[in-house]
Image 1 (tube, rainbow, N blue to C red):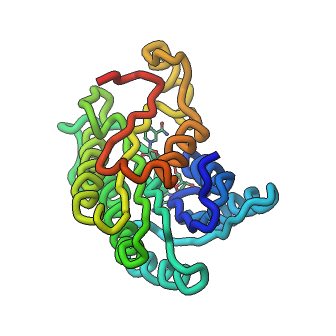
Image 2 (cartoon, helix red, strand yellow):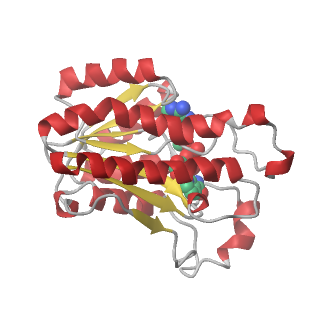
Length: 249
Ligand SMILES: NC(=O)c1ccc[n+]([C@@H]2O[C@H](COP(=O)([O-])OP(=O)(O)OC[C@H]3O[C@@H](n4cnc5c(N)ncnc54)[C@H](O)[C@@H]3O)[C@@H](O)[C@H]2O)c1
């Protein structure tokens, strides 16, 4: 197992879903994981589940779209734990509200912001808050969970989401160029269709996934766990597709 002993990892939105799988994997590799969520009960329960398995985890509540709250919590965590070494920007979709699919020409401009806020501004705010400390300490990992919708066009009514996800991928590429000299790597993971989507939506699409199944939180966690490791220290500015082979280009 790729060892993360002594590292502190913040995983946003790890109270459930993919984030929970990522938090579990990083904790299994030895990291002390900060389980963030906008909902305290989810963050606390997810951290407790790790603690119950003998893993190191602490809950931390903030909204990734609130820069003041992020700064306050990062400052507090830095004092308590000596800084964040690994940040996984996992919060996405439509944030704490249900993801709605709407074709662009029918979409309302007042509804665009929620996608940009969580999928792009949230990534920017969290990254901005931890990057100076990582550079000062000479080691860091920024891993952003993006989506196939951020790589290709899809006829499923997710254009604004996809635009924000594409922005998050290129943000990683740019920042990677600025901080590589400080031992900090920045990469993105484009997830395919995962097992949290409603069955009626997933059923017709599974046929087009060569591996024949939806992705799981463990699949997301395995890629994040590798990118977080020392063994991945010459890999930066890249996008990795974790999608069961759905988009082989
Ligand atoms: N589920 C999929 O099929 C799929 C596919 C491709 C990409 N993705 C991406 O993977 C990531 C995780 O997806 P998921 O479906 O597991 O997530 P999700 O929507 O189930 O949410 C995960 C957690 O984030 C928390 N959260 C929501 N808004 C928050 C905020 N503003 N601040 C802090 N926490 C917040 C939620 O309470 C929840 O516990 C997202 O970036 C998503 O865009 C998911």
